Image (cartoon, rainbow, N blue to C red; front, side, top):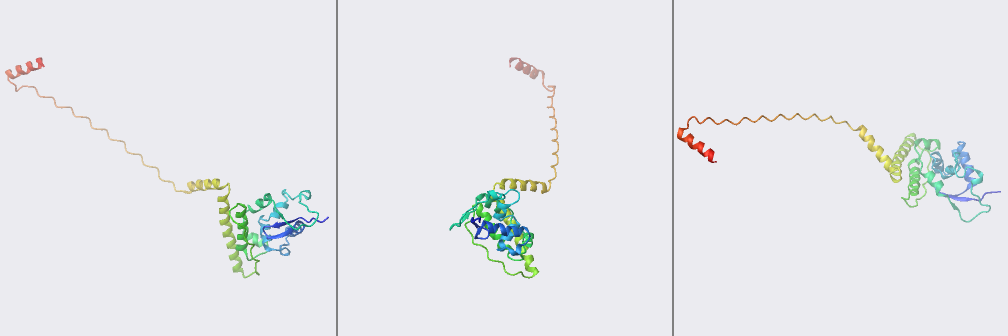
Length: 231
């Protein structure tokens, strides 16, 4: 019996039947990327930011087993919203880089597609409102434009990786690791020279001994002796 389950794909920005999505992903896994549209889906599939790939993944996604797939027996007017478990797992992966675009068979639109996936990633973290879908890529251009597109994607990937790290629970750990790395790379300061030992203070000179009262007369000596006895 046909499965009429339809959901809104935030990557393609369109409503998709689950059965059609499975068929396209089967072709992607066979390397038939050019048979599948839109192109943004190829890019997201390559870097694991596609929610459907996250749901169908062979490592045990929530929709990996046929019995676990959602099912509608009849067509409906409304479409389902993908569970947060699936979208969060997909959008928190690394953003695409140049090699992902090459494997997807794309030579242009790297910066635009990367920005679209970055918006989805940040919206999942609750930092951005709904964004518009990216424009379709144009025909491949010369090799210089290809290199420029890949370089832009790599640069955008690096920026978005930093942004996403600072917005989640790994921020403290990353900051601490960077601080430790800076300590290792910082030039070591020379050890301070030992301070010189303080010089011993000079010994006090003995006070001069008063000279004997040789010059006193006998009367003066007697007077002095008397004063001492009475004092």
